[in-house]
Amino acid sequence: MAGVKKWYFWLCFFALVEFLLMGRYKTYFGIYFTPIVFALSSFAVGWLGLYASVHLGEQTYTDRKQVDWPVLVMALMPLAILSYHGYSIFRAHPIDYRESDVFAQVITPSQLLLQGKYPYADVALPGYTMHNTYLPMQWIPFIIPVAFGFDPRWVPIIVWCLALLTAVFLFGTTSIKRSSLLFLGLVMAFCIFGIWGFMDAFTDEYCRTLELLPAAYYLFLILFLLKGRWLGIGLSLGACLLSRFSVVFFLPFLAWYVWKRWGTNVLYKAAVTVIVMVMGLFVLPFLTRDPTIVSNIINNYKTGAENEWHTHSWQNPGDEPYQLAKGFGAAIFVKKMYEYDKIDGIHHLRQATLVFSILTAVFMIYLYHRNRKFQNRDWVLLGGFKLYFTVFYTLSLIPYSYLFLVPVSVTVLILIKGIMDLLNQRSVQYSLPAAES
Image 1 (cartoon, one colour):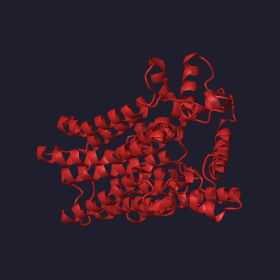
Image 2: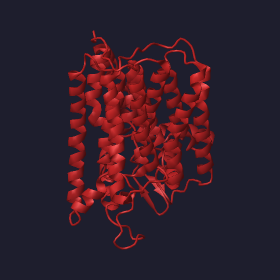
Image 3: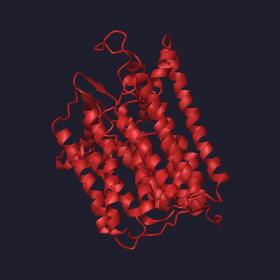
Image 4: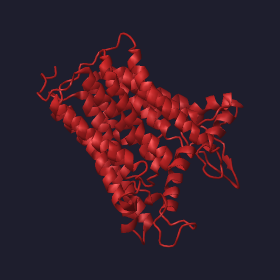
């Protein structure tokens, strides 16, 4: 038990570094060293998850028979405070299409669909129009606020909080002693610290973006993978693929994981669910009508990278490009290497993202296969996801700070899993468990 507490201490330490750099200390180490510290702390969280997959005892996963309301209430309190904090921020900053095209791309198709029109019409913005480059699960949830007339920025934070409440419910497989609830409350407060810091340090980006929504999709995907529910896996993975492409290169490991842990039947049903969802929500109703949607998305991403890799006219001469100098990602270093040929630099960074993301998936398959007889399969998934997202987002062409809410959300899930394991007094011995049947 003492060793596990030491492991959880280091987990909290590196998570704290991550949270601080996502908030008040976003460029504390300077624009060149901060991305290194952030990436190393993120890697450390992933490696600690993988360490737990080998050294912690096998999980004893069971279905809950009833809701442990004191536990959920203790978890809900910090999340409710975070939601109100987010609301107080975006209430003071109305949506303005002159500042960002994000919500224009989710509100416009929602309005068009409710009017019975084709939702992928060009989006009208002040002074120009643009192609809608958002996949369906980026904008379909916003049909609800558009239909009922409330601020659409409620959607991402509510769905994200629901994902964390689901995690507490699923991870708390045994009755937690009431004397331990304080520890859970403290960890939950710590978990929202990173998101709270981002809201305060990047207020403009928080008010103009919706990244907590795809982050919530990934949290649900991880939870359903841990439970082996084929329908949940299929729907959540479909939502991920129809919002961001981030998980695409990790699919080989996810397929391997489901196959080895839950069997061919679960893998087959989940895959069919994903295919049906993608076909029903995107390919048949939209892509068959306008096959250029995907190419427009890719071209806009490439054009956006080319623009963001140059110093903007409103910056001081000699400054590093605004988005590359926020303390995240390796793009700023690649840009320095290719100062006189940025297009070539963007091309090589894209190739590096592809290669290293696939290598991460291959490494995780090897790790799972190599240690299949004694690993904690909950933690190999959590550590693997964190490691993969660290690689993928560190090598992103445009390291927008809000994109890193995804890997940070995985850190939050890891912290919750860790404390629930400790409080449940299971998976906490360093002796190797019995061989997997």
